[in-house]
Length: 62
Image (cartoon, rainbow, N blue to C red; front, side, top):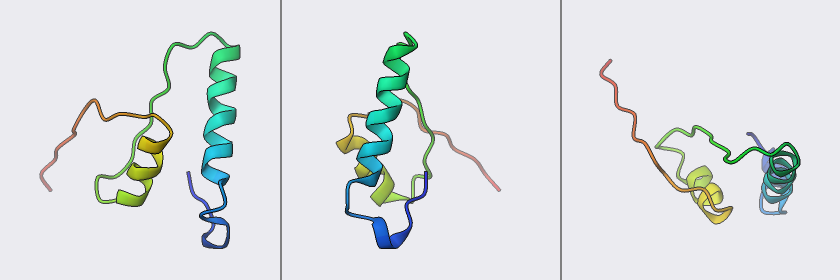
């Protein structure tokens, strides 16, 4: 998900995640998963604040 810099810190991420959680609940889904680059610490922090927890670390060699 991308939030334009002008709207960051205004709760947009929370609104989107709350709507996603409600949609998942309404559709009887038991979990929500997402992927985020490990270097994107601000996104990781925001997702953790919303209740997401890391469950898998993917590694690669280029």
